[in-house]
Amino acid sequence: MAQPTTAKSDTSPSAGLEPSAPAALERPQPAIRYVDRPDMAETFVDSITGLVFDGQTLRIEFGVTRLDEVKANSQITGRRYPACRLVLPAAAAADLITRMQQTGAAIAQARAARAAPRSGETEPAATDPSHQSA
Image (cartoon, rainbow, N blue to C red; front, side, top):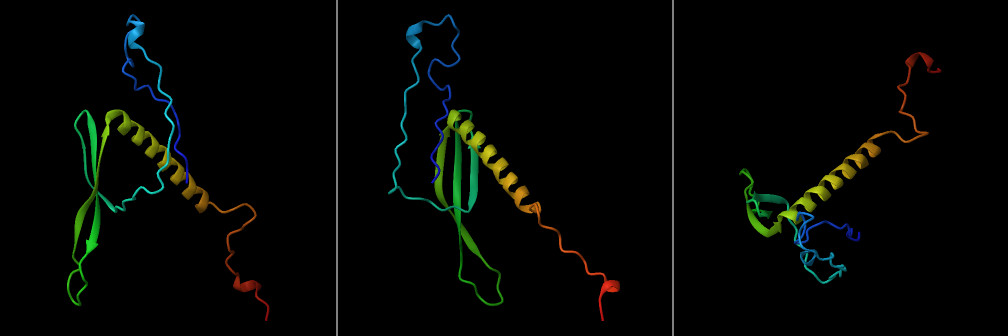
């Protein structure tokens, strides 16, 4: 399991203050240590059913689709239920967007590498009927 990165972001209360601000308002960034919880429940989702940014928070609602019993000669039907609602402050939402862009670029790079022929491998040649022996 990949460990989360510990990149520092400037989300302190003093971020964006002018240099003339009193030194008492400036505080050093706290040292935060990640502690894993292997017993934490995981939630499976197969869709995003809502996404709203209100200027302060990004709200994402994830859904899961459950298909009804399949009956012969009838349309397949199902229902989508909310599975998880995630609310992020603007700074965390910006971090999520950045990390998703990085992940998307890595996925695109992996696909391109998989699609390219490996060195030493050649494409299968079409057989020329004029060179076949009898």
